[in-house]
Amino acid sequence: MSPRQTIARLALVAAAGLVLASCQSKPKNAPAPSGKSAALLAMEQVAIAAHKCWIASKDPAFKPYQMANELNSFTGTPRFLLVPVKHYGGKPLLVVQAQGNSRRVDVYGPLMAEPLGARIGSDIARWQAGNPACGAAA
Image 1 (cartoon, rainbow, N blue to C red):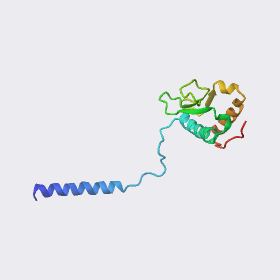
Image 2 (image 1 turned 90 degrees about the vertical axis):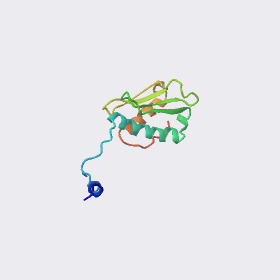
Image 3 (image 1 turned 45 degrees about the horizontal axis):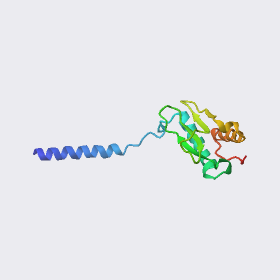
Image 4 (image 1 turned 30 degrees about the vertical axis):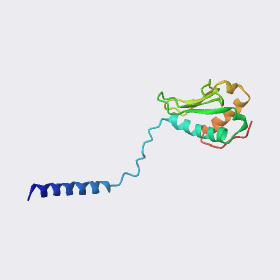
């Protein structure tokens, strides 16, 4: 057998092995890890609902504000901010954040002392509990 035939046979055997390996099924009971912390999972849920209910719905109570998402935080503190609509880089009027492996969401800022604060608190609590419904306007 020539060296060329030997190389061709080895290549054929290797290709057949790859084909067979690709046919193997993955275990069905092992969920794929998301790599997301509990804080990030909680904040994604709350941020999606807040954007849908407050911003995208054009709720008049939230018209003066815009969201600044900071969910991709390398500090382990995913959050979003409400800032004045005409001053994106301005001082946050509301901070909604979670930390580390906790699903607890903290809410603070000047808006919480305003009449809108009670609605913000109840909306965040509802969304954190898994209910994505939008609340009644304040």
